[in-house]
Image (cartoon, rainbow, N blue to C red; front, side, top):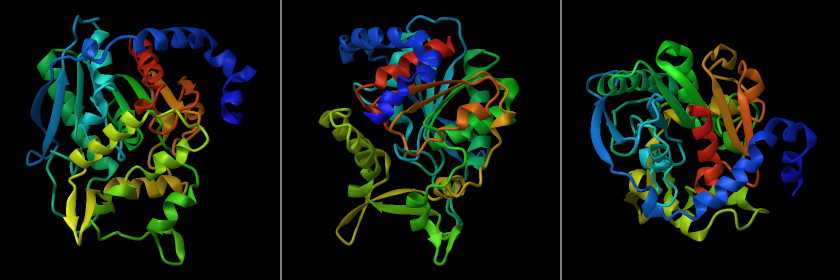
Length: 341
């Protein structure tokens, strides 16, 4: 309860009180709506990346009734490794936003799920590479929709890519939502296993293009963060997230073990971030920005919002890094909707 009490401290109440009551009311209203009421028609297609040889699997859901605001491109986390992270049954952020009047899009990053898997001798798909792919997708969305700008919503490492894109391509970006996003701090529990022996701040697997991880361990950090706040994630949600990981994690069987395969580049980015070597400068973000994070999210940078000029921050109580899959998911959705409008 310590961090929940902190959320309701006078400082945070001043910051968030204007939305707290609305959030609580909306949570009750949204929870009463059946999943089928949100389900919107889904289009799947391939969009070219910055390199024309790279195919990016793309999901599109049209607005039910347009609100006149720019389309939204959603960028997935490393830990929920595909566009379907935003279209999980009963936890579909895409359905919520399309119902709210937004044309919504999501992609599988290069090296993930159904997008191209380049062969390489170094970690595949660092964030700076994905920035170029996202810029190409933004141009394609603009072409298809006739809009002059696109908003970005990025979760976790996807938020890192979204922030870097907003810096590099500010003229094409309307608004930016960063969910559980990292910038620069020290997190040895995550960096020690990846460090070169005897050199804790040097990334070790510099010649490994893809990570292979026991599928049983893929959600271990979520379970760790849930300790002490039992009941936040339903067994159904965890089961659906596990199915998502198997479906989008390019699972292969080796020596009797089921292994999730993901590009190593994002892990190298996260290593740099978690040894406090930031890979982007948040003071250069000039577009309106919302920072969303759970109060039990140890992966997110709690000091990110103050570094971004005029950014708004909302801390969701009793939520982890996987908050969009938890019982408070609709708080994340509602805040993003209000900000993007």
